[in-house]
Image (cartoon, rainbow, N blue to C red; front, top):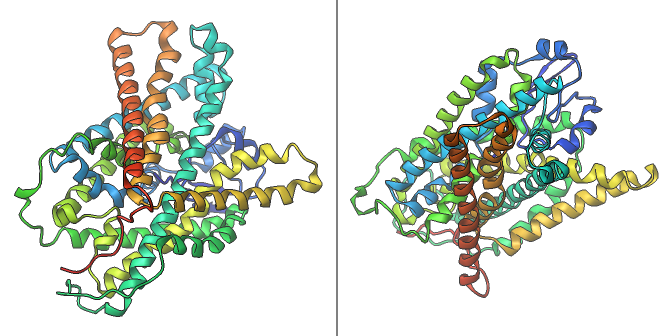
Length: 483
C-alpha cells in the first residue's frame, strides 16, 4: 500500500510523503542528498534527530494517509470475493494481524538498536541481525540473505504497485473518454447510454509511457515532494466524494451471499493484504518521532482507523453495487461531471505517485549497477536503467491488464511475505535463545503458516484465473453504464 514519510531540511520543516518501502541498500546513497532525506536510517546524531522529530499527531496522519492508494478502491470487489459477512470479518482479522506484525518488527528493531548502540535500524538490517541472533548456525552463516530477501520483496512490491497504477490509469481514462459525449450535469444514471468506441486499454497504457518516463527521470527528491503533495490532495478529495456517494441509496442486501465461494477467497486475500501492506513505513516513522515511546500507541490507533476505513469502503461499495462492482470502484461511478472529475483527480494522483513508488526499486538497483562502472558511464547507465524499468512495468501491465488480478498477484506474492510471513519468524529468531513461551512460538508459527498459505493460494488462484481467461485477455474493467 502507499507509504508516507516526513523529513525536514535545515532551513525549515518540509513534509515529504513517499509511497515507498525503505530498502537498506539505498540508505547510504540517500543520506548524501541535499534534501537530507533519510531512507530508513537517520543521521548519526540522535540529538539532532530529536530536534527534528515529528509529533505524535503528525505520525498518525502520515500513517493513515500513507495507506490511501489504489488498494482501497479494490476492496469492494474483494468483499464480493469473500461475502458480505466473511469479507468485513476477514478485513478486521487481517488488520489486527497486520498491526500485530508491525509491533513485532518495531520491538525487534528496538532490541537490536539497544544491543548494538545504533540510533535506528531499517527492515533489512533488523532481519539481518535477527538471523545473526538465531541459535541455528546455518541461519547465522546465511544472515546476509535475509537482507537480500527483504530487498527482493521490496522491489517486487514496488514494481507491482507501478504495474497496478498503469492498469488503473488506462482503465479510468478509457472510461472517461468513452463516456464523455454522454456526460451530463445530473448525477443520476441515465436510462441508456451509447458509449463512444475508443482504443484498446493497452494502447492507453502505451500512451501514458512517455509521461511516466519523464517522471522517473526526476531524481531530485525536492521535486518529487511537489508531486507527492499533489497526489495526496487529489486522492483525498476523490475519496471524500466517493464515500458520500456510495453511502446513499443502498439497495436491499438480502440477495448478497454471506459467505462467497472458497474458490474466490484467495483473491480476497491478495487484494486485502495488498491494501494493508504498509509495514515498511513503521520503522522510519518511529525514527522521526520526537518521543518514540508513544509510537506503539500511535501505531495501534492508526491501524484501527485504517481498518475501520477499509471495512467501511469495502462493505458500503459492495452493498451499493452488488455483483456489478468492478475492480476499481471508480469504474462504477455515475456519468456526470462531478464523478468523472473524481476519476480524473485520481488519475492525476496516481500518475504523480508512480514516480514515488518507482523511487524505491531504483535506489536499490541503480547504486549497485553504477558502482560496477566508471564515473563517466554512471549517469548514462542510471538513465538507461530507469528507462528499462519503466518499460518493464508497462510491459507487465499490458500482459496482465486485469486490475483485480494484478492487485491479487502483487498482494499474494510480495505483500504477504513482508507483512505476515517474515515478522513472526523474525520474533522467533530474535528471542528464541533467551527462552520463549510455547504459546508465543505457536502463535508466530500460525501467523507465518497462514501467510504462506495465503501466498500460495492467492498466487495460484490469480494465475489460474488468468490462464482460464484464455486467448486475448478480457478486460473486466470495461466501461458499462447501460441500465
